[in-house]
Each structure stands twice: as structure tokens, then as C-alpha cells.
Length: 98
Image (cartoon, rainbow, N blue to C red; front, side, top):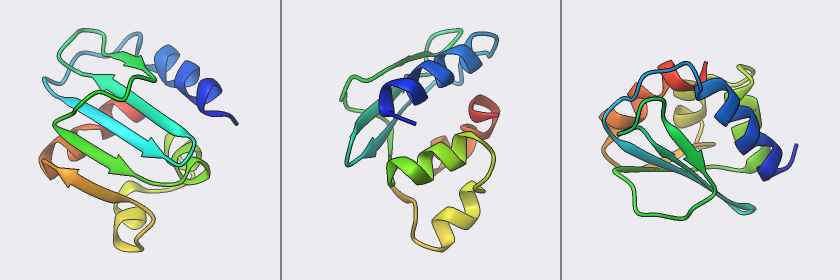
């Protein structure tokens, strides 16, 4: 799955979700996915904006995370996922990603 395809999948999934009051950016070697959770529903784009929380991981691991094949806590504990900024914001993502 490409970054554009994943972004589109996340946009479709966020369509019926409520905002969570923060911004999050996923960065991969292939580019970024920015989630503006200050809006309802959250707006998802490939902008590389500053965010309250930045999550760094490979694109394949991000695809697995969004697809439910990879648990966020497991990814963090095994070093597949690195968090910069407010970790509490990262915890809010469970409601958006699933």
C-alpha cells in the first residue's frame, strides 16, 4: 500500500469519528500523514505540519497498525514506533485508527 492509499483509507475511516482536540503526524521514509483532530471529523492529509505528537515508523508498520495487524503498544515496546511530543495524544489515536 502506498502512502496516498493509506491516507485515503484513513480519511474514509475518520469520516464518522469525533475530533480529539489535538494534532498528530505520522512520519515515514515515504512521507507524512497529518491528522487534525481539532476538527470534527478529523481532517487527514499528507501535509508535513507541526503537530502536538509525532509518531515515526516505517510505512509497512504504519499500514499494519492502521489495519489492526500491529498493536501500538507492542510497536512502541519493540522500537517499531517512536513518539516525539505528547504521549497522551498518541494514546487518543486508538479511537481514530480503528
